[in-house]
Length: 558
Ligand SMILES: *[C@@H]1O[C@H](CO)[C@@H](O)[C@H](O)[C@H]1NC(C)=O
Ligand SMILES: *[C@@H]1O[C@H](CO)[C@@H](O)[C@H](O)[C@H]1NC(C)=O
Ligand SMILES: *[C@@H]1O[C@H](CO)[C@@H](O)[C@H](O)[C@H]1NC(C)=O
Ligand SMILES: *[C@@H]1O[C@H](CO)[C@@H](O)[C@H](O)[C@H]1NC(C)=O
Ligand SMILES: *[C@@H]1O[C@H](CO)[C@@H](O)[C@H](O)[C@H]1NC(C)=O
Ligand SMILES: *[C@@H]1O[C@H](CO)[C@@H](O)[C@H](O)[C@H]1NC(C)=O
Ligand SMILES: *[C@@H]1O[C@H](CO)[C@@H](O)[C@H](O)[C@H]1NC(C)=O
Image (tube, rainbow, N blue to C red):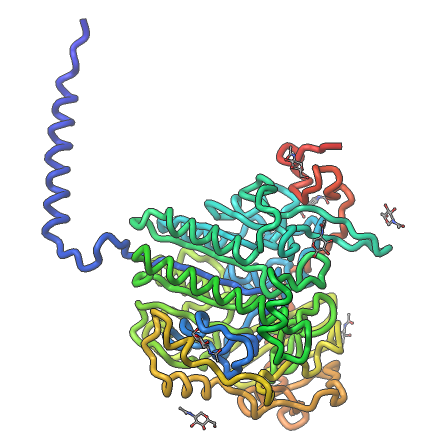
C-alpha cells in the first residue's frame, strides 16, 4: 500500500507558514492604496471624425458635452494635440507609437475587402501592456485589417474585442459596405464578439451598445489587475451608407437642436451628445468600482471632422482650415483631453506639442515599464510633461509623407510646412459651424458644475475656455485655395488658421523643414496597396465580412 509521502506534509506546513506570513505582511503594511494595483488603469475613449469645435471645452456651447468637458477642465486640455489625418493611420500610430510611414499605412484608410493590415512584426500597445500584467480590451472600431485571423484584435494584443473590423457600420444594423466601381454596393454584417458574429445585438444603438459592453468589462474587472480599455466609438462617423447620421429618435433630435440651421448637424449634435453620455457613464462606472482614483482617461478624436464631401458628417473644425484627409490643421489638430487623479497638476491648458504616437511610451512609462523595451518608435514619453507639468519634449511632428498623393507636411516648433497638392482640394477650405451664432444657447456651466468629478468653479472654467479659443484667427471662406505645390509655410503661433503662406519670407526655415521631410522620405516604407478582393464578398459567408483568407475561421456558406 502506498503511503502519502511525508514531503506533502512538509510542503503543506511550509505553505501555511508562508501564507500566514503573507497575511501578516498585508496587515502590517499600511493599506493607503487599498486593494488597488500600483499600475494605473488606462482608458482610451476615441471618437470618430469629431472636430475640435464639436466639443465644449474649446469654446463652443452649441453641442452639449458636459461629461467630456468635465474631464478636460479637471484634467489637462491638450491644445496642440495632433493625430494623423484619417482613421487607419491614426489608429496605427496610436497602437504602435510609430509614424504610419514606417508601417506602409500613410495612405487612405483600409476599405472593406482589402487585404491590408498592421504589419505583423510590430508590437502593439496592448501587447506591451500585457507584459506588464494588464488585462486588455477593445470595444468598437478596429480598422487595422481582418483578411487573416492574425490581423484581428485578439491576435494583436487584446484579450477581448467586441465591435467591428471595418471603418464604419450602420448605427443600428452594423452593415458595412464596399462600393464597387460600377456603383454596386457590396454589403455585409460587421459586428463580432471576438471572431463570432454578434447577430443577436442587431437593432441596438451602437453608442449605447458599446458603452454597455465597456461598462460590463469594468464591472467584471478583477481590481487587483491593471485594466487597459479602448472604447473606440462609431460616433460621430456617418453610418452604413456613408450618409446615415444614426440617432434613436429623429424627431427628438430635431426639436432639441432646432436652433442649429443645418438639419444634418442637428442629428450630428444628437450623436455627439450621446457620445458624451457614454463618457459620463464610463467615468461613473469607474468611480463606482473604485477604479477611478487610479485611472488615466484619455479622450480624443482620431482626426478632424468631415464637414462636407465623402462621409460628410457636418462636424466642425472651426475656425481651423481644412477637413479630415487634409494636412491642414482642421484634419489633424484634433480635440483631446486627458484626466487622471494621479496628475500633480490639473485643470490647465497644455500648449505642448503632443502627437498620437506619444501615448504608447507615455502610458508604458506611467505603468512603470522600461522604455528601452519599446524599440524603435517615434512617440515621445510625455508622462512627466502631463503628470508634473514639466516642459515639453517634442519639437517636431511628421504630419505625413504620402508618396502616392505626393503630399507631405511637417511641424517644427511654431512652423509648419505643407508640400504638394491636396488630393481633395475643396477639403482644404474653411468649413464648419462656429457654434457661436446668435441663436446658439450660451454654454451650460451648470451641467459641468454638477458632474461628480468636477472641482472647478465657473470662473476657472471660463478662463480655461478662453485660453483655447481660436476665434480670432479664422480665415475667409472661399478665398482662392492655397496651392502648396511649391510649398506653403505657416507660422502656427501667430496664424493657427493657416491663412498666410510665408515661404518667400522665411526661406531658411522652409529649407530646414524641407530637409527634414527629405530625411523622412528616406525611411518611408511604400504604402500598402490593395484592391477589393471579390473573395471577401459577404454573400459567401452567411452575410458577414470575415477573415476571408483564413477560411477555417470563415467557412463558405455558398
Ligand atoms: C495578402 O497580403 C499578404 C501580406 O501583404 C500577402 O502576403 C498575400 O499574398 C496577400 N494575399 C492575397 C490573396 O492578396
Ligand atoms: C442599414 O441602415 C442604413 C441606414 O439606415 C440603411 O441605409 C441600410 O439600408 C441598412 N442596411 C441593411 C442591410 O439593412
Ligand atoms: C458590378 O461589378 C460586379 C463585379 O465586377 C459585378 O459582379 C456586378 O454584376 C456589376 N453590377 C452591375 C449592376 O453592373
Ligand atoms: C443645463 O444643464 C443642466 C444639468 O444637466 C440642465 O438641468 C439644464 O436644463 C441645462 N440648461 C439648459 C438651458 O439647457
Ligand atoms: C473670457 O473671455 C471673455 C470675452 O473676452 C471675457 O469677457 C471674460 O472676462 C473672460 N473670462 C475669464 C475668466 O477670463
Ligand atoms: C512631387 O511634388 C514635387 C514638388 O511638389 C515635385 O517636384 C515632384 O516631381 C512630384 N513627384 C511626383 C511623383 O509627382
Ligand atoms: C446566418 O445569418 C443569420 C442572420 O442573417 C443568423 O441568424 C444565423 O445565425 C447565421 N448562421 C450562422 C451559422 O452563423
